[in-house]
Length: 261
Ligand code: 13P
Image 1 (tube, rainbow, N blue to C red):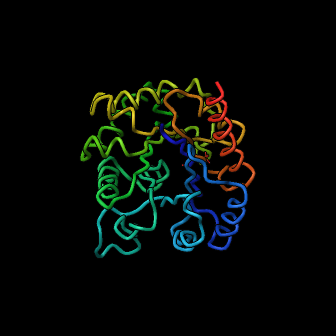
Image 2 (cartoon, rainbow, N blue to C red):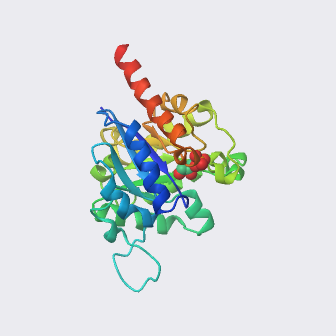
Image 3 (cartoon, rainbow, N blue to C red):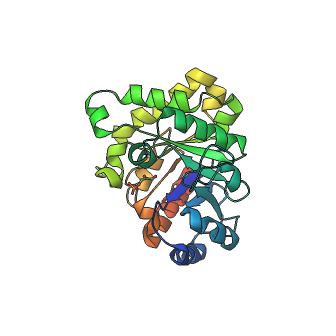
């Protein structure tokens, strides 16, 4: 069985002391669950101190981005190579990177490849803007983002990766319109279908597809109930102890209810 994946993307919030405080509080509430994987994505400066603080049976770490060259004269960048042994996951192609930092399809593809080459698991973010959705371009956008990002990977590598469907219009940064689960179920199925087309169903059934966009403790379960949804990627709500632990609890309760059935 795939473990339900909950990834808290802290974005450019919380300094080292604040990050450490939140982790200490989360430790008190979140136990290791066999069927839930909780991942924290703090800022780059907090990764090292947090890595020595966390109980790795309960939490894994993700970086929010990295640079695809392993080393060289790229002032200000941190490479995937440098993150080896520090994090398990790296978020790649987040819409804030695509939009604010002009990351195009080629850059995202190179980052996904560098992530895998360096032994970490990419959490590839894909999603359409409000304008693209209104123009009926959602499937084309998702197709292009998925196909191009995976183009250097083998089936085994795709089976092991995570794809986050984050409709840009539903992310708090870009307006945070609440997407009903019925608004996203088709898109998530479409993403899995793309992987089936490219690599076959033996691969696509293993790839974890998660949802992000204004997820909180109240809405998490409804997304997690979607057939093709293997987890959630909250931003804002992951900064709040009550909301984030509420999301983890929702996943726990849902899995428990399913077992009882
Ligand atoms: P919000 O939950 O704040 O909308 O952010 C979602 C997101 O971008 C996670 O990567």
